[in-house]
Image (cartoon, rainbow, N blue to C red; front, side):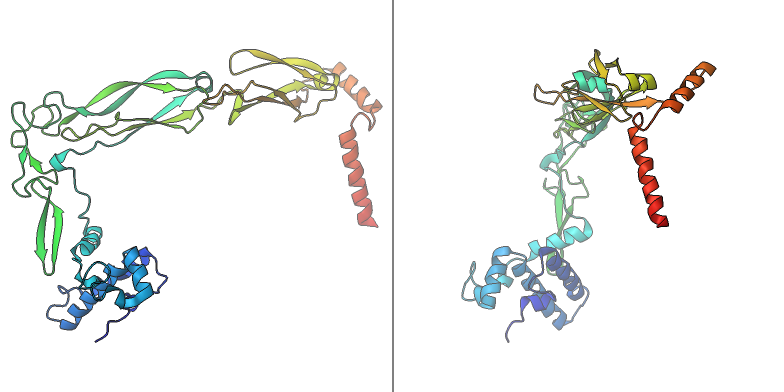
Length: 375
């Protein structure tokens, strides 16, 4: 009896990707599993057929050979010896599937030396701190290695012993039908060792909670949202395992005067109507603590920008600095005296389109627009 096409067996197209193959296999394997179909010879045959098909198509090299030569690629000892694709021990294939279904994967390091968890610390700094850089000391509550037992978890003078249930492997096997399934050892929780006489200071965990003071170097020019990694400064590992890492997430506080865009700074400065009209100058502060003078030409309008080169933020790992941009807004005067009102009214009476070219141009366009509507 000739074999069916492997793609047909799994019910997928020849263009199916790895995810589609695995999904189809899971569905078919569960449907025809012998435990679900006791005494059903046809289901057992289909189950073996599904496993053989998936075992071939999940492997890139085997799949390429099958796509080119079909079942002949595995006959007469081809592609790794006789017996065809089905001759492979498909317990590894099923262990992948059952691991995903029932959460039996993972496992712990031999001897129970688990890596500690990574920690996160949120740190707020000022724009001035980001400009100049600084060293900050932080208090981090974390788990550290127990000094009493040196992280072993066992009482001083004793030591952990090999788990008798799993023989130190951390996992146990159980036969079910055609398969041998693995799961975490219930006696040692996957550590491979048990502690009969635990340390009194840490209750056998090999670590204890305490606050630590760490110094964090903030480089000049650092940007908002930057993450700094301190290797090995996270939570201590279980029973002498390696420590995790500490991640510092930086937030730069909003500034009263400056807004930042990369290495450039922006500052909004209000100026009087007379300064904008007649021209003048003003001093503006810089983030490094000095001041710079800005000259305002006659007839300056709201939104005009002035550029101060090199007065922005430093660029990390270089000697360059960004620029600072000063954007002016012309402030309309309020609380005028009678004399001031009279002068402004006199100016308005004597002014012409030459004094207000922008507004004169706008209202000229408005007039043309209305005239065209009436035409």
